[in-house]
Each structure stands twice: as C-alpha cells, then as structure tokens.
Figure 1 (cartoon, rainbow, N blue to C red):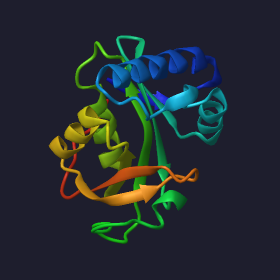
Figure 2: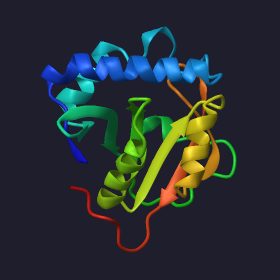
Figure 3: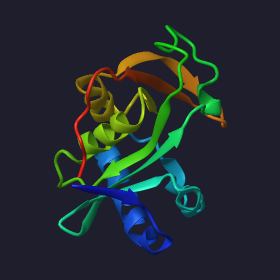
Figure 4: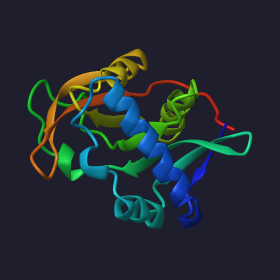
Length: 169
C-alpha cells in the first residue's frame, strides 16, 4: 500500500470515500457523526492545502483517506475523565475513512502515523462502535471525553508508540 499526500485533483474521490464512510456509519447505528455532509468540501480543501490530507492507494486506486496533523489540537486541550496518557508531543488522526470493501486500510493509516510519532491521539463518536473496537484492537487507550468546537462530545483515545515500527511502502 502506498500512502501519499492528497492533491486538489483527488477531491472527487475523497468526497466519494467520505460518502461511503457516512453510509457505513448509518448502517451500523451511528446516525449522528459526520452529519449534514461533514467533512465538507472546504474542510477537505483546507486539509489538502495544509498538506495533512493523506490518501491510501492500492494498485493505483485510492482506497482510503485520513488527515494526520501535528499536535497540539485545540479540541484536545481539555479532557474530561482519566486524561491523556502523557503530555508529550503527539500526532492527531482525523477524518479516517476507507472504502467499505477494503480490509486492512485503516490499519495502514495507523501504522503510517506510528512511524512518524511517539504518541497518537484520535477521537470518535460514542455511537461509532466499529471504530471504537478498531482503536482498542490497535492498542489505543480510551482516555475520556473531549469537546468539539460546536460543543459535541467525542470519546478520546491515545496510543504511546514504543519500540520499532513497521515500514510502510
């Protein structure tokens, strides 16, 4: 799998992947996350222009998208609950989505982040049971509740990366 930075010319494919992810969420009981067409085209364009929108390609086909940013993330400045595992520098994964017919793509996104950061943070909606299970399976610890700018709650996860990580090609 190849992971690369997205270009503006990729926007239609990215929007399609996000549309498919929204449909998957709805099918699995998560009716509130990514409501009203989020992530918006303007959000995607901002991520592309900032160089943080990443695409997963397999045999020349884009099969996943995610944003990988340097912390600190302002929505992570306050956490209710157990709190973060440490206060060290971290990377943040946002807006992770894969084509529903592909296996292992989200795992590659996590591995990519693990190769760049010693700490990764991510959040998701309480109703996103598949993502919550995925994060636990990949060694993330549930740390508490964070609040988005609009006041909505999200469950926050943190992973401390230790030792050698796998190279991504």
